[in-house]
Each structure stands twice: as structure tokens, then as C-alpha cells.
Image (cartoon, rainbow, N blue to C red; front, side, top):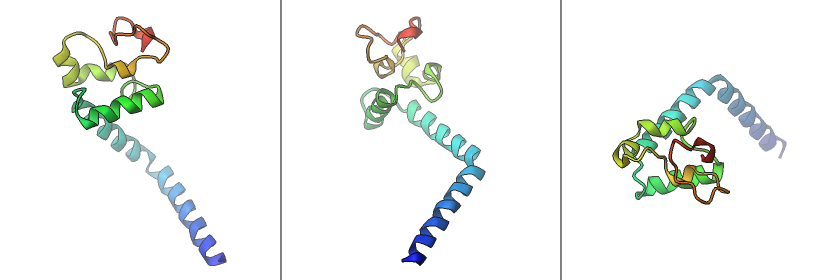
Length: 105
């Protein structure tokens, strides 16, 4: 029993040390992956549903902020200068996602 607990403890310490040492690489890789998912966003495909769900649950918009959406194909194709409605604050009932109303995002 002691050996199993010791192995688990060593694994946890190792994971913490590796996470700390490689934190910038992990951060860069996660942001790169998120940007590629946002680039595929069309509001209909399964990845889009996941993006909408995450933005609603985490109360966020974009990778860093709502301006990340301005470089996506979806933003350029809509032509209405707005972000997905999942970026809207949950208490804003009439939010349209327009960038000229950032207080609602």
C-alpha cells in the first residue's frame, strides 16, 4: 500500500514540475489549438457548438478577448461587425454581439 501511495506521490510531483517547466509551451500550444478551432467556426458545425458552450460556461469571448474574433473567417463572412451571441453577457437580453457595444460582451 505504501509503495502505491509513494508512486502516486512521485507521479504528482513529476507532473507539477513538468507543468511548471513547460508552462509557456503548453500555453502556446493551447492558444494555437484554440485559434485553429475558432478559425473553423461557422455557427453550425460540432466545433462551433463546443466553442459556444465553452464561451457561455466560462464567461469569456475569444482566446484572449473579443477582438480575437476579428481575424476569423466567420467574422469576415458575416459582414455585420459582430461576434457570436455566445460572447454576450448572460444578463444582457438584447445583446446582438456587435463590436460597437463592447460593454455587452
